[in-house]
Each structure stands twice: as C-alpha cells, then as structure tokens.
Length: 453
Ligand code: XLS
Ligand code: NI
Ligand code: NI
Image (cartoon, rainbow, N blue to C red; front, top):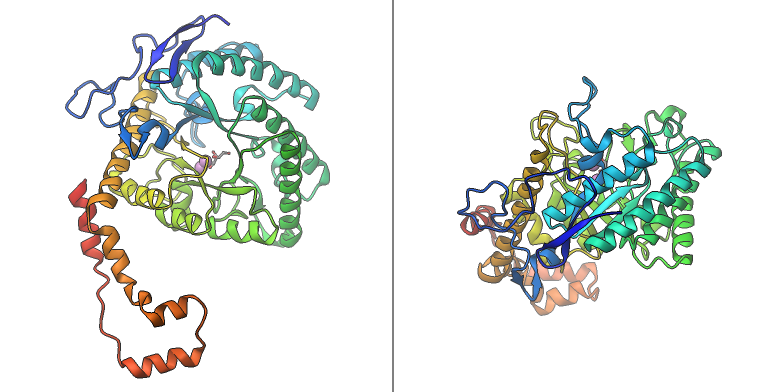
C-alpha cells in the first residue's frame, strides 16, 4: 500500500492510496460560524474542551461505509445516478481496495475518528463461503494497514443478513435451518474481522428478522431462534476475546412488514426475557424511531432508563412521508432535545455517532458527501454545546426536579422505597384533600431550548 499522510486535527492522519479521489480537498478545517467556506466546520471544533473531554471524544463520529462508499443513488424507480470512481474496477479485490482507499481518504480528510461497515460493504460476496472468507481476509488485512497508517478506528462491524436472496424469509429467524446456518457462518466471519480490526462494538440490525404475514409464521419459534442465535454469536465472540458491546438496532418495519426488534422498549423486553442484558445494549437510529411513531429522544429515554444506551445511528426522516429516507441530520432544535437525554444519561456507553445517512439521489458530486457530513457534524456539535449550556446554566434541571419534589417528602420517600401499602395512599389522600393543579409548563421548557439556540 502506498500512501501519503499528513496530520489532520489531533489524531487522524490524512491517508490516500495511489490514486487521489477527492482532488482539491485537503482536509476540513474548523473556521467558525462566520466563515463562508462551505468546506469548513462552523461549530465542530474537534479540540474544544467540554467537561474535560474534547468534542471529538464526546461525539465519536463515524462514517457508514454502506451509504457513503457503496450507495450509488439507485431507487425502486431508477438506476444508480452516482458514478463513483472507486467502483469501476471489474476485479472484486481491486474494486474493494480502491473503495477502501477512497473511504480512508474521505474519512481522514473529514477528520472523523471512526468508521462502521457490513462485511460485504468492504468487498463483494463470493460464490461460496470459503471464497468469501478469502476475500474478507484480504480486505481486512488492507483495512488493518489503513487503520494503522491513519489512526482511524472501527466503531462497529456487522454482517449483512438481508440483501442476499437466501435471506428473503429472514436470517436467524428463517424457517429453514440451512439458511440459519449460513447466517451463522456469515456472523462468525464478520465477528472475526471485527475482532481483527479492533472493533469496539458489534451490531445486529434484524432487517428481515420479522414477518410479511402471520399466516405462515410461527412467531414464538422464530423469537426463540433469534435469541438462540444471539447467544451463539456472543459466546463465540467472548471466547475469541471480544470485550466490546453487542448492539441491537431496533426498527419497526422495512423491509419486512413487521420487524421483531420493533423499538427500544420491545428490544429491552426481549433481551430481558432471553437473558441477554449483560452483553447487549441498543444502537438507536433517528429515522427508525420516527418510523415506530416515536421521537428520537423517546427511544433514547427508554434505553437510558434501562442503562442500555449504547450508540446511535444519526440521520433524519421526512415528516411528509413515511419511509426510511436516511437524510443527514440538520434540525438543531430536535438534536438538542436528543442531546439533553444523552448528556443526562452520562453519554453513550461505548458507542458513538454513526452517520447512517445518505446524500440524495440527485446529489451527484463527490463534494456533496463532504457537505453532508460537515452539516451533520456541525449540527451535532452545535446541539451538544447548546444542550450542555442548558443543563449548566438554565433552570431546566431545577424545573424538572421541582416537578417531582413532592416525592422528596417523608411520605414520598416511603412510597418510592416500597414501604407503603395501598391503604397508606388512601389515608394520605384523605388527609391532604383535593390536589392543587400543578402546571406542566411545557411551553416554558420549549422556550428554554429556543433561548439557548
Ligand atoms: C437499516 C439499518 C442498517 C443498520 C446496519 O435501516 O439502519 O443500515 O444500521 O445494518
Ligand atoms: Ni436505517
Ligand atoms: Ni442503522
């Protein structure tokens, strides 16, 4: 591998292959909000300190290999629109290396510390398991060199168990054991390369683990199989020395009509039922939350409440239509609401902010992927700073505390500690009489966010 390196920001070194794909862009500097340079950060100053950690350490941004280097703009109504120069070689190994050169060039020019992949984002799947293993060995060797040269790390790996036709009836929940076995082989290999590359987490997104019709589905059996499968994967990875976190990424539907990992609450119930709570946490995605008719901060609150807030997939949906549009995040007000939850929970547990987002079909310039990530990173950085200020300076926390202050009384503490019986509640009600009307003050809370924006 021949590469050029120079330092971008604190840790990541710009790393190109023999061919330079993003000519004319050397890196994305922080220039502040008054800069008119569209290829600069306005808010994301990676070295800025906040509570003893840099913004880079707080946010732990990652690029999603699949959208940014594999997604070429095809949709159900039309062929791809993006001619990415790293996808032209016909030999799969050469193409995978070109793609990885482009990926590391992009990631390092952005100054992002992490990336995430599915096994067959890295290299095209071959015709047999043995042949695919060989390909994965070659490309993961190459990734290892790239990571060493650049300082970029792997936030998480995963296996694509939804694109190949064999998975049309699901992977771990497939009614055919032979397909489950194939999924097992694939996860074993994906775990092996994740481990080899020092991956900090491993994700399961159950794209086709669900059903299209209940008429042909034994739901209980499929859920038991899913849990069995996750135990096997976890036991194998732990035996190999993986110390990171397994993450389940909930989504209610798409591509299936109903996905078993519907939302955070359902996944938590599943993990609890099948004794997986010690090893698994959640990877929450904005657009999956909205598909489940929740806000993103709702999903974050649910996970944080169970101490399972692992990582996030950052993107946004479109409020005028109902599917997973995976757009880059731009809505600072909503991100502040999310970051309030994340900060109050003490941050993400081992995860980071992965841009599971894609540029639009008609965003066909290579520069567009820079604009997209700059926008997302700036929006997150800005929201983080604002949320931090709100927690630090405003009456937000005090207001919320005050709202529950009746539970600080002797009776309230007795109730919370489980030292009351129902008759005690009745006696308290009789003693104190009709409760006063206590305003929820929603508008006041909403105005606090606006004030700090
Ligand atoms: C799809 C999911 C997927 C996972 C990784 O909607 O978001 O991209 O993040 O398999
Ligand atoms: Ni998604
Ligand atoms: Ni995702």
